[in-house]
Length: 114
Image (cartoon, rainbow, N blue to C red):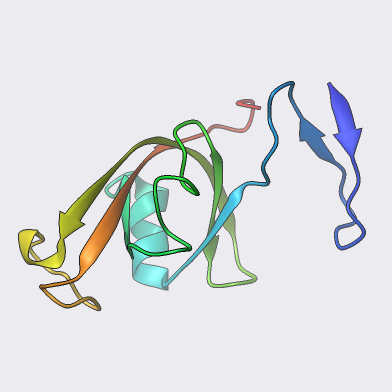
C-alpha cells in the first residue's frame, strides 16, 4: 500500500492498488446525517446531473458523509446506484416530483474497514 500526500490536507491518504479516485464528499443536514449515523438511512438521493451520476458514483467508490461541511464524518462506500423520479419518494423535499434523482445506496464502514 502506498501513501499519497495532498498539499491541502495534513493527513496522508492511503490508496490500495486500483484505487484512482478520491472519496466522494457528501455534506448533509443534521437530520440526514443523524439518520445515517443511527443506521436508519442507507440511501442518499441527489438530483441527477454532471456531479451526481453513475460515472461519478461508481460501485465500490469510497464516500465521506459529512455533518455539514466541517462536522463529524462517516466512512461509507457505494454498493449500487439507480435513477428514480422524485414522485416515487414518500417525501421528496427539497426536490420536485418531476426531478430525476440518483439513489446512491451506501454501506457504512467500520473503523477497521480500509
